[in-house]
Image (tube, rainbow, N blue to C red; front, side, top):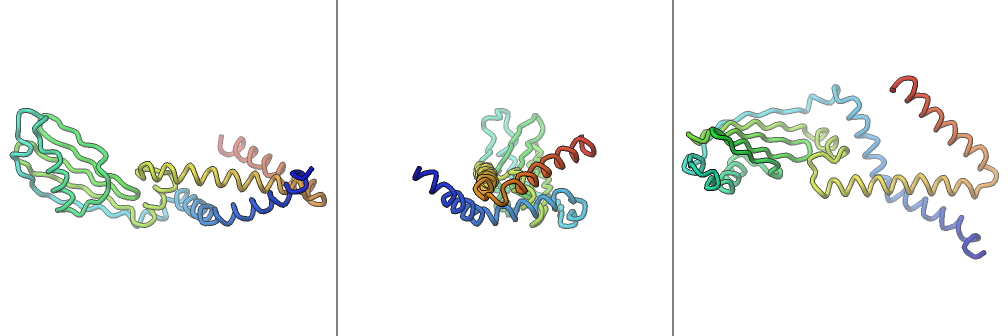
Length: 197
């Protein structure tokens, strides 16, 4: 009986504070939903830079690929080109090395000629919009980005559920609120089946 009497107060408290805790997250996903949906309007921030350079060919021009100086090469590329994104891929072929660095809104691809040590770097930066769009998708954001998206999804689900539960305790608004919720669900389903599917 005590739990039943306190449940509306607890639900209201949870809904208010979960809403405030997730306000920035809701706002972030709302804005980035628009920037992703209208990517053609925001592509102006995309910057591509190309650069040539050279690594010590004794690091690359070796018969045994296990003796290629991978760490030295990666650190030299970082130092000379200001790369801070995590290393995502390093592949060794007979004639070249290909190295990729990726982070939210950023990508750097390097191709190194194993015989000469000469490299070609292509760096693509999406600016602020590219960063927030990739964070929205959890792309190239590592484990922390994945956890951020998961925690955000859980918070948004809890806010929705506590709001619905709170509505059930409001006698005067319960029927109209549930009708509006049902209308929203039907509208969402109709939009999907008529225009999207």
